[in-house]
Image 1 (cartoon, rainbow, N blue to C red):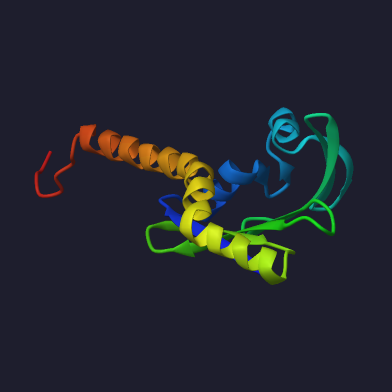
Image 2: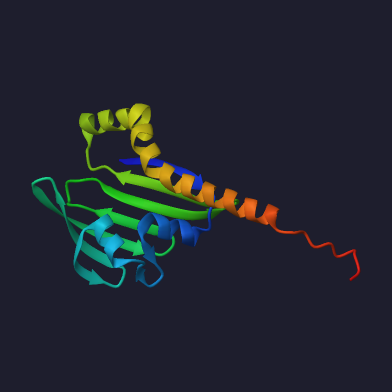
Length: 159
């Protein structure tokens, strides 16, 4: 079962991907920030990372695959949900879609889907998507202000 939510972010696909994932075309943009976001890197092969992070009293190992600037896939274990982030260029910016690949079936899966549709989409989606949306909206407003403050050249006047 797929649980899906997303939003349009007013920024170029590369910038949105880098802001969200911390990955650039050549790997992590900042190793310290990457470790804070994903945990200690145990192994790396091309764009695939195996990381370990402390979650309370338990150490959790994640597998993350990066396809710059279009996709990120994060997997925990065979029984837990996987997370896939998809980035697409759209008019006015980037569409960022998060898909949670739930591995629950039957009645528990139905209840999870129903909860997600009614409440979870907003409780999860808003805190995850909002920081990127606010960041790029603020950046766009600042660029507009700077453009408005620049003196306009008039090509019809002679020097």
